[in-house]
Picture 1 (cartoon, one colour):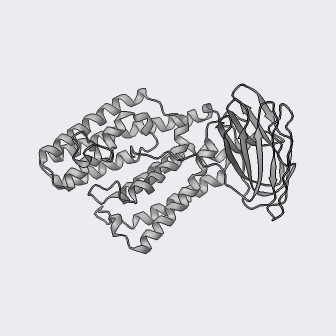
Picture 2 (cartoon, one colour):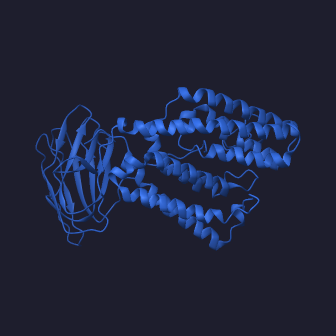
Picture 3 (spheres, rainbow, N blue to C red):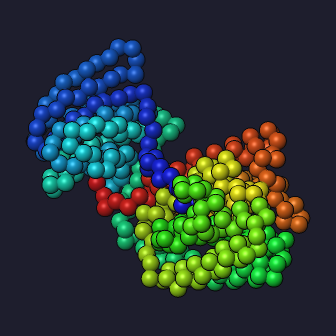
Amino acid sequence: MITDRLRPFRPLLRIGASAAAIACAAAAGLAVAAHASDPARHVLDLAQPPGSCGAPPGGLHAGPVTFQVTDDSHDYVNVYVIDDGERDKVYAEIQDLAPHATLALDTDLGAGIYAVRCVFSDGKIGTSAAISVTGTTDAAVPGYRAMPDLDLQAPVHEYTRWVESQLPKLLADSRTLDADVARGDLAEAKQAWLTAHLDYERLGAAYNAFGDFDGELDGMAGGLPRGVTDGSWTGFFAIEYALWHDQAPAKVRALTKSLVASVAALQQDFPSEEIDPGDLSLRAHEILENALQFQLTGIADYGSGTVLATVEANTEGTAELLSVLAPLITRSDPQLLTSARQGLAALQHVLAADVDARGTWRPVSALDSAQRQRLDADLGQVLETLSGVPALLYPRTGA
């Protein structure tokens, strides 16, 4: 895990060729522009009746579609493309669109009857007239069912129990590292450091629940006033830098003692913390996204050359997360789970070629161009697949 994390915008659905502009208001007029995908453009100016949600075209061809949504009310609004029949599936959404703001609502619709629904912060709810979609498309969005926080509680509890079960090993391996440093065996300490660090990297979905401990244990030097020489820098990366830059044993020992104390405190504190249900689905994608950003770029390499081992640990952490989310993913999109697991297996197969029988990992800088291209391709593929998990399981009470 990395404390300097990116929290990417939740990827929902993609932008396409056909478009319609909808202005949403609680009880006001609006203009709708329907743009055909052929060179001839048709602009329709329509007025919204009170209680509606814009006036999208009554008919569209199957395939990509974009609704350019502007909130002309004085309230925040959630906007959804829904199934106009059962009305229990969402095909695209915008959360908390601000008054007078405009955002694109993108999706890929198969044949069927749809509508646009607006849920305003003042409690008003409006639904547009039906949108009839005809034709075929190979990339229709399957639709996402409501996912109340309550549905995510079972995976949260299961994952929390799993993290609790891993913390004793993290503490034991951190103590082994400290003991190696205490007796001056820095060669053994390097091996012990990697073992303990990978223990921590497998816990990638719990970082928010770790609070300040995450910074103490896994913070990088970026942003510190004096960088790698800053006296406040602690944790695995600080120890890595000290071990692989031949710093004084007393300096290394101070860092490993601090590490043990922080891990012990984390183990004691964690049962009182709560994992946000929304974090589980986000981290299913973000763990490996962070690996791409920080590990494969070498940013998180402070001398050991073991970033590929970290990526492997991240794949294991992602696999564990998918296992606890599997019942919910399968309920809505079983093929997504199958594809994600296949993608992880392919990535792990590639990474397995980068470690020898003694457990020594190839530095990422030592990969030749073909090896790097294969690694990037497999990681990119699994990231594309995993990007569907946050949208599928994003906590929502319905449209």
